[in-house]
Structure formats: C-alpha cells, structure tokens
Image 1 (cartoon, rainbow over the protein chains, first blue to last red):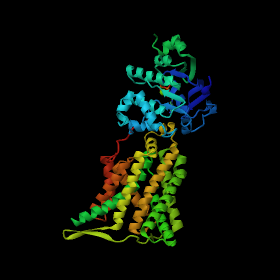
Image 2 (cartoon, rainbow over the protein chains, first blue to last red; image 1 turned 180 degrees about the vertical axis):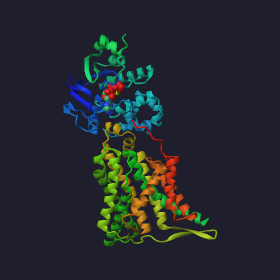
Image 3 (cartoon, rainbow over the protein chains, first blue to last red; image 1 turned 60 degrees about the vertical axis):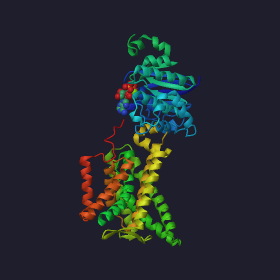
Length: 237
Length: 303
Ligand SMILES: Nc1ncnc2c1ncn2[C@@H]1O[C@H](COP(=O)(O)OP(=O)(O)OP(=O)(O)O)[C@@H](O)[C@H]1O
Ligand SMILES: [Mg+2]
C-alpha cells in the first residue's frame, strides 16, 4: 500500500509547552486509521498542524510525496485534504446549503448540486433543514453538517476530529454507520477519537497518543483487546 | 410641513452617502475586528480623484453628462479601490498577528500620511469641480415648496444601486460566501481552502470603492473639498456603522439612513449649528443604551 500521508518525527510547541513529541505515523491509501488519546493528548494539535495551524517546529508532514508542513492552509485544502474539525466550526449565520457550498471551494461549483444531493442521501436530516440557519441545529445535526461539508470537496483524505463528542449514543451509532458507508467507497479516513470502542471497531489500524507521544500502535482489533488500552480508554471492561 | 419634507429629502441624500461610507467601516471591522481610521481619508482621496477624472475627461473633449459621470465613477472607483488594497497591504497586513493597539496606531498613522500626502501633492487650498448637473424638481406644499435637485435624485438612486449590487454580491455569490465565511470563522475558512488574506484585501477594496462612490456623488453635488474633508464625514459614517450595529452590512446602510434623516430633521427644526453635536451625542447614547446597534448581534462569541 502506498502511503498517502506520513508524519515524520513531528514536534509542535505552543510557546514553552511541547504539544507533540517526535510523532511519526502513516496513513496509507484506502485505509481507515484512528488516533485515540485522552483530553489534552495532542490529537487536535496534530490534525491542525497538517494545515499549518500551528506550524510544526521540526519534522516533516509528507502528503503524496511532498512536505506540506510549511504550506498555507488553503494550499493544503486545495490538494485533497478536508477536515471536520474539533467543535465542528460550521458557519453559524449561514444556511445548511451555504455551509455545504463552502466545502466546494477547492474544486469549484461544477459538481455542487450533484454532491449536495449525495450528502442529503447520506444525511437525510440535512435535507429537511437545507434552508435553516446552521446555528439553530442540534449538536448531532451540526456534526453531520461538518462531515458533509468536508466531503463536498471530494477529498482524498478525510480528517475527522472527535465526531462523537457530546452526542447521544444513538446519534454516535448513526454517524459511525455513515462513516462506514463513506469508507466503503474507498475513501481514506484519519479519525481522531476518545470513543475508542467505536473508533477501533471501524478502523483498520490505530495509534494511541499519550501526552503528545505515540505510545502504541496496532490493528484496530489488536488495540481493542490490548489490556492497557482497555484499562485507559474502554473503561476497563 | 414643507421644512420637514425638505429636510427628509436632504436627510435621505445625506444618509445614503453616510451608509455607503459606513459599509467600509463595518465590513473591515467584521472581518478583522479593527476600526480603519484611515477610511475617511480614503473618501477624501476619492474627492481629489473625482476632480482629476473630470478634468481629464473634459480635457479629452468629452462633454455629455452621462459619459463624464460614468467615466468619472469608473476611474474614481478603480483608483480608490487600488488605494484600499495598498493601504491594507502596507499598513495592516504586516500587523496581522499583532495587538489591536498596534493596528490602531498604524491606522491613525495611515490617516495622517494620506492627509499630508494629499496636502503636499495637491496643495492646501480648497479645490472645486464644475457643476455638471443642475436643475431641480419643485413641489408645492401648502404655502411653501419642496425642492429636489436632479443631483440629489441622482445621489439617492446611485447609492441605492451601489448598496443593492453589494448586497447581492455578499448574499448570493461565491465571493460573498467566502467573505462571510472569513468573517464568521477565519481559521475554518482557511481550512476549507479560502485564501483569507486575499479575502481581507478584497474587503478593503470593496470598502474603498463604496467610499469612492460616495466621494464622487458628494463632490459633484457640493463642488468644493480640501484635504481635510474625510475627517468629519468619516466620523459621521463611523457613527452610522455603530448605530446600525458594527459588523452588520444591512446595519451600516440602515444606520446611515437613520443618522442622515435625524441629523437633517434636527438641523431643520432645531438648530443647524449644532447638528454635529447632535450626531455625536447620538453616538454616545447608542454606545450607552444599545452598544450592539440596531441590527448588530450582542458580542458574538469567537471560537
Ligand atoms: N492554542 C494553544 N495555546 C497553548 N496551548 C495549547 C493550544 N492549543 C492546545 N494547547 C495545549 O496543547 C495540548 C494538546 O491539546 P490538544 O487540543 O491538541 O489536545 P486533544 O488531544 O485534542 O484534547 P481533547 O481531547 O480535549 O480535544 C494541551 O496541553 C493544550 O493545553
Ligand atoms: Mg481535541
């Protein structure tokens, strides 16, 4: 399998605080890879550093053979990377439809209508609300919108930051089912989660991050039965 | 009665121009959270460019009003827009990640630079442009009459067209969506592939072009101007932007109209000497009673 994105010994600092310490990881084409870790482990920092916010202080981020670690955010976005970020960050005063259109910036409007219909099939709740102001939607709907917006750019690599955060179990289940459907189309997904159970069941491979370092790696099934992982992230049972 | 009607007409004219200039304050504030104190001087620059454009067009033997006015609008809007772009580039972009205070000082510096540069290059004396459009409509009202000059009608119509076109661009086009996205969440906008620096430049250019439209209209109507005209009208337009709710585009237009109308009524019915005092008292009152303005949202939280 060819590597699509690779972190090579990446350090990130926020002033005196080191948030990522020599992080190395690989995501290959067609894979679903998950990164699990507790609050403050550095997961969101890692995802955002792909877009240069913050800039890494050393190491390399190789994407399709090119070091993108010093590129601008819009350069990265226009080369097939899309993110559903921590906190969803949908545009509150825009309608659902306008939020979706914001996802088309890197590829233009040519497929907008067709892709929007596709999103409404994946997330029927968005269809009923297509003209509603995004800020008035429920947390689960906002999360769906954030994922759909990322998909609108037809990304090669979909980055997701804790899509299950703060959502009812039934909604989490729905969202993971949709991610499974998306993955079955061959899309590469890099999923950051604290909900290790769902994430490891979905993923081919996983990494465990502790205090800015990669502590463990393995296939999803290996990590699911690993005693240390069970103790720390699966409530010990 | 005739005085009230007359002042309503005057207020509408004044208000639509305030609204045009207020757009620049409100859009820039919306997108980078700063008050562009050089904006009034951008307006002032556009008055000079108006005069230069008219002189140029007349020099080339063009005499018909529609062609002169369209040519002047085109030239002035283009050149003033370029000023807006350059000002953002040299005075604000280098300070993108600095404190608000540094940006504020840079803005005041830019304002002084523009005033002195114009004073040096164009002279300190008052300048003027010839009257291009004269004549008026007159309506009898009771014992008196209300007079609306063709120029005032032209100002109102042109301002409304300018505002309408801009509203359409912001609400309905891809560029408008990119501006709104950058305003609502700049970081997310950049992650979605928007070159937010470019959008910020474009917003400065939009603000400058709207000020330029106002500059052409007022200069044609009033005839005279100097290097200092940007100051008072700048503060008035800023008041209008705050009145409407700073950051809100419809707010700026509405605030302009409300300010223009109330100022004109005050001048007509109470005292025209104190109309500026009235406007600024209004500003203070809004800041005390409803700081978010007529259409502004109460301090939106930023992630
Ligand atoms: N802008 C910032 N300035 C300073 N420190 C920061 C900043 N953002 C994150 N940090 C610090 O970096 C570390 C990693 O934070 P990060 O948000 O990446 O963790 P996370 O794994 O995503 O946590 P969570 O699961 O709570 O979202 C934390 O110690 C955090 O306090
Ligand atoms: Mg996080």
